[in-house]
Image (cartoon, rainbow, N blue to C red; front, top):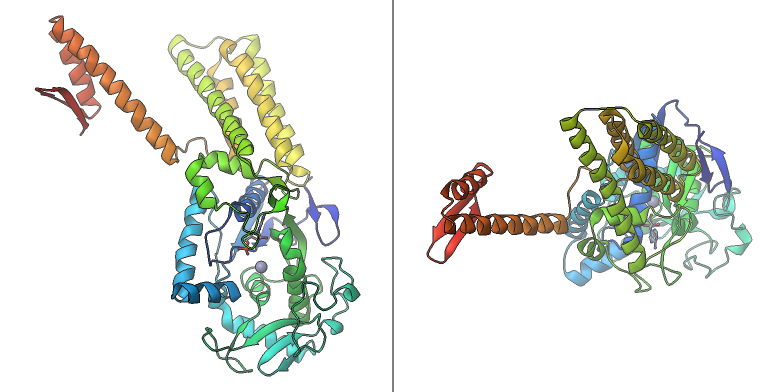
Length: 478
Ligand code: AMP
Ligand code: ZN
């Protein structure tokens, strides 16, 4: 039975979707004003793993993750760079998709953008006003927190503690410093949209209420994001959705990932203590980065340092070596034929055990480090028994279980996707061809022309053409 930690109740609860086998899931995505840092990438990888595990359990998951393409950061950066918010968004949405591919994130069902939902946003703000929970001042619209008794239920912050100045932006237009903005009147030089309150743009929280409802309907099952979003973003989202649409609990399970930290401090752009996902992916094997990002339980902090990435790299190598060991044994048995042995039984049992252990860990609020520990125990079994296994079927089963389980964590054993990988393969190919050319030269010198021709012909069959020049032989592909 799957249990998930629900921020709303601060409890691990049994996961029961609202609609049978269908899971509806919304994850707050990036603000597309800059290169995401590796902390943002943790959030992407964590929720992709959660989604993959839900699919493994047999649920049909509808997965929505948005792009915030209008807010203060977007406007300021577009102005600094002399570009439009649309162009800025296109550039960093392309970057997101590149990171998503390199981290092996499954494509979302939809990646909606805030600016595509202005009509829905305006409609929601109108409903909040109509229901007596919002008020208009000089073209701004505010949510009246004093009218919302459940305010603070998600973040567990008592209303009285939300005094002016405590992470609440103070404005003399607000009736109460705790109120938050739903719609902002146009300022000179800012992009704006027509609305019943004059030209303006939405407050940040509005978009996720609207897009969640638009693509999933309310209530839906899972809402995800980093812990920094619990307050005010998600608290305000609950208030908006409930006040506008009359649904007390718009989301059944709130899941929040812990921070990726640097020297125990949250990685963030504003603190200047960050590495971009791009820098990290350019310097390390992409699959090792993915493995690192899910190496801690998603709700706990995860420290970023070179040692942790090196360790992930070694873990990845151990997985790949185990695969090679098993494949090597299969190819031997294909030539020599099968014969059952004691080791077959042991490996067969280990293949069953790892699945059960993996599921127990993942069912405990997606305990990925526990799941990985099960996988490495299995790898030790593979390394111990494979050389003595006599049946190819049991080896194929071990391989298939291993690749299925690491696949849920986002590791694709068939992929050879990194620049380093293709660089390394090219380097290896060059070495092998040059070695064969040396052997051919030796054969020619020894007047063994049959051997030298054989080498040239075999390379030719592999698409490698040799030319003899006065400086010696050269080769090229094709
Ligand atoms: P943003 O682009 O700032 O809206 O962030 C995109 C996602 O990354 C959100 O879910 C954030 O909560 C999450 N996030 C931001 N900083 C971190 C961090 N240091 N560690 C983990 N997740 C983070
Ligand atoms: Zn959001």
